[in-house]
Length: 208
Image (cartoon, rainbow, N blue to C red):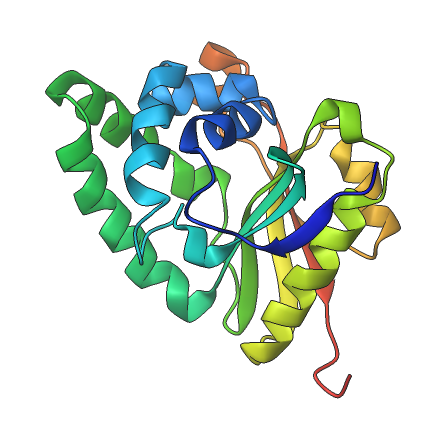
């Protein structure tokens, strides 16, 4: 059955989004958030907000009736900084003290694992399709609307980060992404099993 790809609505239940996002990289998310309940809290408070890394304002969904079949969250480089600052403040208020300290400690390594996007980039923070909807074309449709958003923001490239062993890498290469940077943080790999990640870039033509 065909899913409808559209700008996200804040009425989508945040817990279903958190479950979908966790499934994209359980090892990394487990390290970052400690437990799924923490991601539920963050999504629950940020999704309906007007700002933030996980705000519905920066998202597109593929809806199959009331089910979220796919989700893409992205930001231009100008949007990302303000949304990141909002999220840091929000998370400090939404989480318990131990949860917030764990997340702060985990974030210490993220700027080593994930390179900063270039200027005039549209950064895909999250890209997820429900496993039972793989191969239906939803991912391609989500990427098309993200490309339109990037063009509207006068971006000249779209970028994302993904684990090198993630099966999604072949899809990204198929739609035109190239690997720009490979990263490995020894402490994350040796102690947590979070290995090589790829920073992938898709050049876009503003004349389109």
